[in-house]
Image (cartoon, rainbow, N blue to C red; front, top):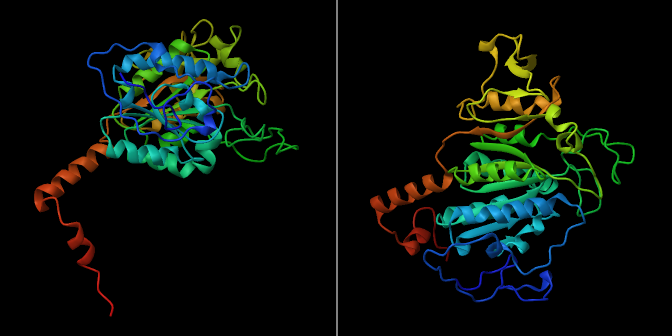
Length: 367
């Protein structure tokens, strides 16, 4: 395989700073039946995050997962916005783009719609995706564009040094909220489900096996896949997810969702979930509750209200955090629908005449 373009648009060069990258005329030629390994997806760029940042773990898990796609590197594209997480495309030896704040889903939409042969991944953060990029995110999800969106959620603005973000808890004291944040935070999964996302999942940076399992499920899904990844920021919001990651507390606080499996949680798996009379989920003792009332996880339920109820558990009386695939349902992707529409138009009208189109209908000449 010839040399892959790095994330800034040009081929990798030893020692050159990231900001100096410029597009280069380079054509990648696929090599038939080439077996790729993790090392093939590591660029020559120095990885620059703060010591202990959860982004390191996500990058390593992502790079070691990519060979499973069994596609040439030139068919893999990673597009990011702005933020600490958005540096990731520099470190993966593939095509990619470090784009503009909040607009990564829009850029990825254009690419995925025009190049259905590509595997398009979006890397973003809670500030990038849910603040300036909120509008682009929800429309990419409702359109069901065939892109995979990885949202790194550390509940803080890390790149700009510790301001509160759209997912920071109410009352959060930061440099920009010295008396505590007044904002009610977004729940990213609830937002995605409200936007009719066909694939919604959550995982954690430090749980590599689980993270890669969710990536695998997203890659196999046709349409928009949204994955929230809890990611620790050791500098500005350290241990925000400690109850979910530390050995002494994680078994009690995490609900692991597996399609077709009973939902059980707690250190001894002694708790289950059921719906109450108002349609909300409640935790019950699995041994004493009626077996027929306890939930078995169904990620393929057509109605998103069940997945939505799961997404609210950490802010409800249950106060547990589910991880895994919340929803995975088939729905025509925007890319496929657009291709079908174009084919129908060509069949009816041929390739068309652009000049005639521009000069016809509602146009006229003055003078």
